[in-house]
Length: 557
Image 1 (cartoon, rainbow, N blue to C red):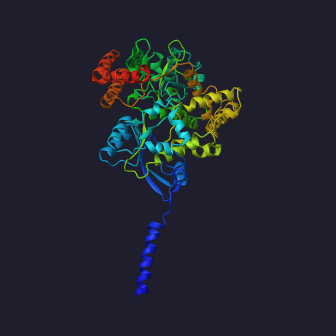
Image 2 (image 1 turned 45 degrees about the vertical axis):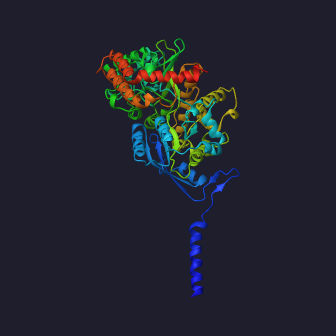
Image 3 (image 1 turned 90 degrees about the vertical axis):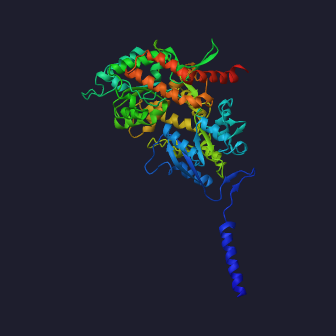
């Protein structure tokens, strides 16, 4: 009986050891940092972005990046919400209200600040010093750290803002050159030329199918922020107007909201005339940028204003659907035919943060480092970029999958473009190119050597050529950046107190007014009533707060 009892106790002890004592230990370096978790760590996340494109068999929870997190850190990341814009904001708001937030999340400035003050977010101040890798630190800080400073709440850090250098203005003009050639038209040199091309594309059957089914200028219903397809910003810029840029005036020493200026009113008047004459889709008021992109892919739209990002998606679809299509790009022009001054901004939109209840807040930095150590690492190989970046066969951008992805606070695209230009012109050799830039350069070079012709068997060469070639989109952006025609918004901080309460309403008012003016359901003169209402409903207080913010950081030093 005694031997039996000892045997049973031994079995219990062995079972206990198997349950607790034999768990694999975390791998820790000499500084006490977790390098890899011994046991799998399951983390939930809300992901704020539009639906990316996937290779066959992949999805947001099954792709190279999810596997990378598992292989590197033994982290099993589960994206439980993938949404964008108002849809994401609504889901995040509900999670906050019900106190059922995920482990990891994207937050807007107001949510980030309020949750930090309420103790709902993990304080990662000390973890930042311990876990933030050199590349990530350089990415976040930029030259002066001004963007990163916005992540501190009462002197403590609860996450960090998603940097991307700058917001590229959606004022890049894309035109179907094959349509120009068919109609014996030249590429526009002035804004009046652009309008004439728009009328021809709408009325003269540029696709040759004998039907009146094409639009002269693609336009979406997004009247405030930049849009990849169908932005109004390029037309407003022709007249000196803006849709969401805060402008500092040196003469008066004050900051004002650019969407309220006289140039914006004149730009809306020009759009209203094109709409009335049938040049713009009558359904633009209900079409988001994605739907304008679908029209572009279907060959219904041959000219639009947008950003560089559109090349990788619906513009690529257009080429796949019609390999004979040919696109050219140019900067928005003013009324005299010069490059227009266009609004840009430092990106300060989303904050990456960790739930205070999360047992592994350091995962914030581990996942962010995973992205930086591949995409922004000067030692990355082309094989790694093919695995985790743009797929060289399908053109799918796998760098849109990772969580906590961010690019340098000083835009790396400008640096890449500048060095690619030097090499393409023979002013430097390939050794000056970062690994990612080398990938783009090789594609642009191949495209140029093929006479700037699309090869259906190599879509990435076309993508890189159209974006980074000597007459490419990013080269045009670099031109206006270096000439001072890219005007950075004077305000880029977290939302002011009145913005938190009123800006959403004011944006809705702007979108509604601009849409009505363009569609003809309100007169151009109603713009003046809009300006008065905007100020009365909170805009005047917001402008005061923005000026105080600007003076504190730039004038009173």
